Image (cartoon, rainbow, N blue to C red):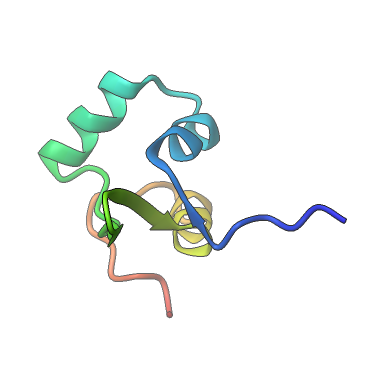
Length: 68
């Protein structure tokens, strides 16, 4: 059984968006990727479902979590 993780890395986000690492960090730096990261020790992760909802909404720059 394959279960998708609830938290994903920036690499996973890049795959979901079909963009490279530099494009992702540029989006994050400029505010075009508005989803707040979750820090776990030395790791940075993003909530998978929130990223999916953001993509489904058309990747808006201003995002409040899409009904969390």
